[in-house]
Length: 292
Figure 1 (cartoon, rainbow, N blue to C red):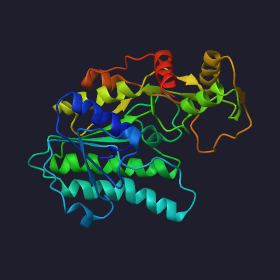
Figure 2: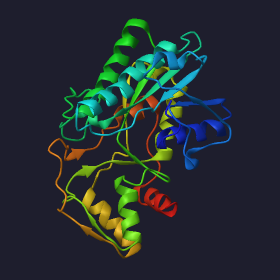
Figure 3: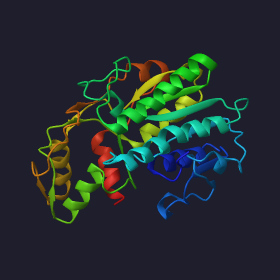
Figure 4: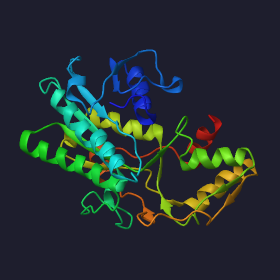
């Protein structure tokens, strides 16, 4: 689900290489950069049950990366976010054939932790301090209960910041790279936030490892690089590649709801998934900016 977005596109691409039959369900057809020839694109609105009745949901594996990540500014935007992430997920699950389903992989968010200082553990009591984080946690809590009550074969991969080629250009790495490439001034915060950046291929590998591992059922698993970097040092490194660009540090204010130290402890991922990130931040950034 969400196969027309950044993460979903890369899931589909990997699934094709592994000779899966691949379907993507989303509201709209994909943009050209996210379109793949061997994927069957199903158009449906997950927030409307009737929209799903025209398709059969006899799938072995489902990866749910649907729903746009944003921070709503008003009540209509909050309703939209809740519908797309939470109620859309519930409608999807109710439509699935539980007899054929082997694994439901849900893409969670580090925003679920709130202001708990890093490194964040899966056992931390989450207290999200923005609406996006609260909705994502609501999805996680639902899946945990559904596993405990019904044995629903789900896992929540609680993902930290992901990046890579063809990511949306308003994200920090492509945003900084494009401005440096053009030698432009660009506004940014002081940059003292510590963040964890995971290359897209490593995330995709963690997803596919979870498909074939029954030990993940009912679990929440942090997925990240595990080595934080300050936003200031990240931007400075990108600028050093181009030798131009003029970041204006401190011009933008940090949101009051922003966690200054956000990076994961990855004990569970290593123990259960036998997974860790393989792509260094430097190599990942080079691959990302080469695709701009």
